[in-house]
Structures are given as structure tokens and as C-alpha cells.
Amino acid sequence: MNLHGKKILLGVTGGIAAYKAPELLRILQKRGAEVRVAMTAEATKFVGQTTFAALSNFPVYTETAAADSKPFQHIDYPRWADIYIIAPCSATSLARFACGTGEEPVSLCFLAMQGEKWVVPAMNSVMFNSPAVQRNLQTLRSWGIKIVEPAVGHLACGEEGAGKFPEPEDIADELEFSVAKRSKTLLITIGRTQESIDPVRYISNRSSGKTGVAVAREFLRGGWRVIAVCGPMEAELPKQCEKIEVKSAADMNKVVLKMQKQANAIVHCAAVADYRPKQIAAQKVKNSRVMQKLELEETPNILKNTIKNKTSKQKIISFALETENALQNAKKKFEGGGIDILVVNTADNFGKDKVEYAILSKNSQSAKLAHGSKEELASRVFVGVNA
Image 1 (cartoon, helix red, strand yellow):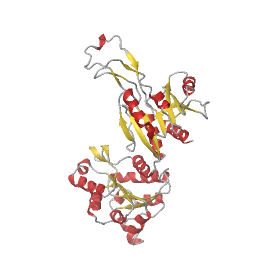
Image 2 (spheres, rainbow, N blue to C red; image 1 turned 45 degrees about the vertical axis):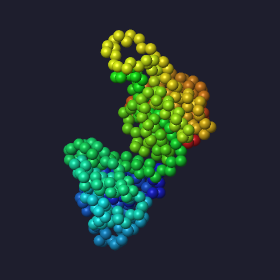
Image 3 (cartoon, rainbow, N blue to C red; image 1 turned 135 degrees about the vertical axis):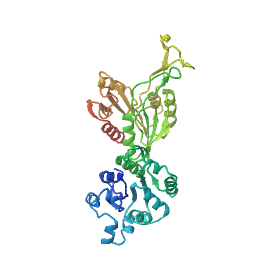
Image 4 (tube, one colour; image 1 turned 90 degrees about the horizontal axis):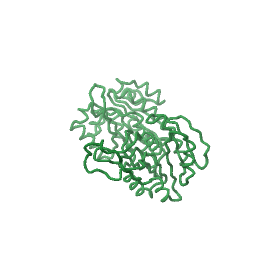
């Protein structure tokens, strides 16, 4: 929990997305932060201040509260906070921030805040894309204020487009990733490779990249820098990763070996093709039925190449997908040497959010297959690497 001990002031402005702010508050608390809240009068029409007071266990700064209690909350709250995040931020509040006007608690705190400031805009896509809003966002960026880009999707008004309030978990992730001290580096391969037959056909597999993304996210949360070498995949990589896109096994091998010296740990999670066509047709094969035989050759063995170049300070983690005799086959691979941790998983839940897996290491080679989420698997890998 990289937010442990952090003091976060949450500013809530008017808009339907305000109903998600209590969830964000609770997530920040679960990750170790202490949270206080400031609200505009418009925001209280969507979510009552009593809700935030009960969740934060602290008085909420509103126009009414300011009149009834301390006169200097607009100074005291920002001075207390390490981070001030306005989520959601309406177009009106955004304009106040950019113009430097303090008309209500949220904008007054914005003026007084001397620490780190974050803004999470949420509004109709037509408003978000307007020249005025984009100019105001650019002004805040030029001041060093972090803008959390809105999601694209179905809006409360029924339209589709940019301006959707991001998921509270994703906002908390961005905060958590930003404060982490990244003294160690993870190099991870994710997704699958594609070996071309001709310009439109290729040899590949069904790996979605979900497990690799879960591992990358776990290491980010643990304070690691993450370099992700990604083949094609459906899973969405956290924005905080340094992403390098490849397609073939040869390309992935080249990038991994180039980046290996920077890594404290290397996780081989991508499903890499063992073979590729010996010759690639320059043009589409007009009638693929005539291709009775496809001559293949081996692709580079990325795992063996990294083991060959491994330093005494590096740990190498590999994955083994098995369809039968999973543990027996995995133990043979592990005993081959050079691997510090081997994760064996079966194809029973291929592409799903839960997986059957076991983890082999020098300290634990009697593991048993168990069902669990990919997040649980990632957590166990992280613990093993840091052991």
C-alpha cells in the first residue's frame, strides 16, 4: 500500500459522476491514505455531505460548514494535505482553476494548495472537447498539475465519447503508482507472438495477456519500474508501464536481450511460438489449399538466451502452460536450471479470470495445483521475487 500515511484532500464538484466519489474515498482509505473532503454546493445536490463525513470521519468543508465553523478551512485543509485531487471536476470548476478565482470551497482550496494537485475531469464529450475546456486543461498541465484523462464510453446522458469518469480503482492506481519509489526494474513479456506465413496469415495462439497484465500491475503497486515487451493481446496494460510492442519471437528476443541489463527480475509470461515458417511469402498466397506442407524452423529461445546472459543479481521467472501431467512436466523444466521461479498453469480456464496454477521455486518444489484469480497468482510471484 504505497498510499500508507498519505494525506489526501478530495475535492468533489457538481456532476452525476459525484456519486462515484464515495467509492474513491473508500478505496484510498483501504490503500492506507487519510482522506478529507471539500465540496461545492452543486456537488451536495448529487451526494450529501453527511455521507462523506461518515466515511472520512472528519467534517466536510462546504459553504454551509464554512459559515458555521472554522473561517480558515480553505487554508487549513490544503496545508494539511500531501495531495489534492478533484474528482470529479466539472467544466465550471476547471474554468475557475484556470482563471484563478476562488468562489467556493473546492476552488479556494485549489488556490491555497501548495503541494501536489490532481484533476479528474468528467463531463459530456462535447463539453470536454470544446476549445475552452481543452485550453483550461492545457493551462493546468503547464503548471505541473496532473490531469487524469477521462475514459471513453457510455456517458450518463446516453451519448458515447470521451469525458466518462474513470473507474475509482484506476484513479487510485494512478495515485499509488505516482508516489511509489521505483528503485527496482521488472522486465516482463506479455501476450503472444505472431509468425507470418504471408502478409495476411500467421502462426499464433490464444493468449489474452491477462496474466501478464496482472503481474505487471502487482509489481507497479509494489514500487517497481515495469518494462513490458508486448506481443498482440486483448488485455489492457497499465499506463504506468513502459510498453514496447513487438509481433514475432525474433523481435521479442531482440528487445528482451537489449533491455535485460536494466532488469532486477525478468518474467517470461508471453506465449512465444516455438516455430516459424522458413520462408515468408511476399504476397498473399492466392490459394492456400495448395500449401500441403509448411516448412518450419525454430524461433529464438528467449528464456534460454536470458538465462545465458543472467547476472548474479537477477531473478528469472518463467511460465509453463500444460495440458497434461502439469506438475511432472513443470518439475522437469525447472530442474533444467537457471529459473528461479516457475509458474505452471493448465489450459482448463484458458483466457478466463481464474486459473489453475502452482509455483515452483528453490524453496518450494512440492507445490500442488490450486485454483485462484490471476491477481492472487501475481501476488504470489511478487512475494517470491522479493523473498
